[in-house]
Amino acid sequence: MGSNDLKYEVSQNAYIKLVLHSLKHPTSAVNGVLIGRISNDTVEITDAVPLFHSQIPLLPQLEISLILIEEYFSAKGLNIVGYFHANERSDEFELGGVAKNIGDHISRYFPQAAILLLDNKKLEALKKSKSSGAVTQGCI
Picture (tube, rainbow, N blue to C red):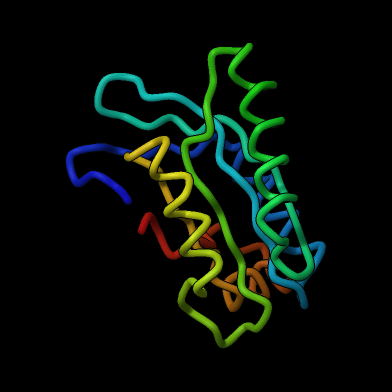
């Protein structure tokens, strides 16, 4: 799902959106897509579109969401370049089966897709302090 010779840059706007979406729904699984483009050897993630914050939806809802997002951003020269996910429980540190399937689906259309898993413990610490550390576990 990621390429070793590519760098990934997440804009402040994209990062803030995915963090705030996760913080707003701390007891729910949260997910969304990452928007951007490839420039030379860098995947530039310029925006994030939060999708769901409850049960991860059935395929038709997800498919419609991805089609609408792709249509909207392709007119601006941008594409879906990845997926972000925060688990429902703070002690879960791996992508679940459905989240992996969504990431696989996105990577079929964009092989260099970034899959970001947010660390719920770091999100919780962020709420309690002025910590500026990253809340993702990195590209998978």
